[in-house]
Image (cartoon, rainbow, N blue to C red):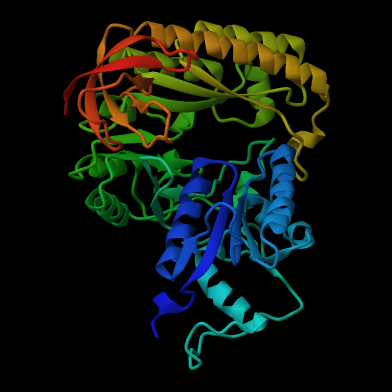
Length: 464
């Protein structure tokens, strides 16, 4: 009997919280379970194994993780619930204490989920694999936790878990980097993800080629701090995207997020003239106040951020620019927030991703005076969200009447098929004489806003 039959005819369910990187890794875990004989549990079925990929960027994320675990334990009585992700790494004992949790895997361990699952099944008396498998040693009854430290004297070298996977949408995610060597005062990600590390360019190109062979047309390049690519291989991010641009079959790449200080003019200029990299940027700002940026221990100031936005718009006038911003950090006064608001209003950006500051244990930010009340955080968030909606609407409106190429995405039955332009405008397609298929590039003329105002209407002109 081969490894592919260890878990044949068993069912798995998945629940993922957090960033694109989490979804990429969860998708890879799901694929490995499928290859081992699991099938995804259908709605209403009780799964044998439930994999929960958690986030811990805020206390809200921790709470959502706990709630999800409780809910899934009720929905899948008797299932082995395996918890991974940042919450599992940072607070493994807390996660292990939640009723129903069978196993907690850290960042270095989740790539070996199948191996741990086989061991756990030995402990449970489940023997779906050869009796002579010398690797199958029971996990001691005394612990559910398999988490290795990622920082400090006890930490070994953090592992890079490769991942190139398709989620439930059309696009694929290619993980090129993990971990972070930056220690912003508000952030636990370096502790949850470990040191900056990456795959080699040659390996990542092969993964993109394999995705293309499976029909992928669009890949999102993801990681924790992808501009820091090369720490473990001596390579560079610009060399990586040059190599990926040459992969036949991939029509589009999107870069998930780049720190302003790592977004070089060379990268911007390359994207502007490349074959497949889209005019779409996501840049974390966090605050438009230089004083707050210093408190956050960010590695740039507002002047550099403005310069990057202006450079992008100079070579790609129609580029979509998304911006992360945090409100209500300790020490952020009304004047600091006003500076942030005015700075963002003055920038030619498209969308704001607004987060309310959440205090995280062990971070340097807790030593900063001046906590901001929750009601004030909410007020500031609402102001920036309104500004974001205004900017996004204006950006969409400026493209009405233009032509664009749209990659159609998988849609639920009864919902008009839609997709995104090169510069990430969502387009809702009008009925076509010929059936429209997902993962297809179509040339469209952009019309007015859709009924709910979240997209532009598109009429097919010719298929690419």
